Length: 276
Image (cartoon, rainbow, N blue to C red):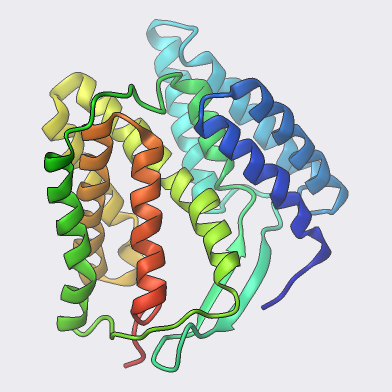
């Protein structure tokens, strides 16, 4: 575990994410400014990185304000900008290494983790571009919601059968870092992209089933670096997160289910995969 003094920068960033996730945008962006200024001070964000951030936010904010070709252009730039941030292609960001080739347990493959500054900013840009990103809450039919949750719970044991994982009970001393990073930085950004944006926008045009399918497939493809078996499992998991979002109308519910799946993986199975 590697703890740098600059880690404090991610505290206001996390607070801003929580404010935004519950729909309080003004305090969210105010606290986000504190995080960005702190990142500048700690040299985790350069002036160029800040310029890319301001540019992305400015363009994203125009998506709901303009019409016609201007809207398509703003949307296209926002998507390209988001892709660049997600893949860490845009310069000016020094993400913080906090776990360097650590093992969750004896049978787990060595794991490296960064606290990213660039990827979480996608959530804020998408909020500016799509004011209804967080969804529209609807009455929850719990008996219907149980089905995707059962399907999701079955994925990890099935992965054991396929040899990708092994059963391993562990609580590494860096579990709190994993919780912080995975819940507030990783899951929020990914659910905002695939459920809040992709699934909702495609649903508007082609219906919820097509929106669910396409968002789930794209979520699976995003895990291609881990191999085709991971793509298949991630696609199914994405469908379960998507069903959670569709049935509840709440993005935070999809975020919570996504995180609980990942945290269960850490606690009860080899993470991220088994040593072969």
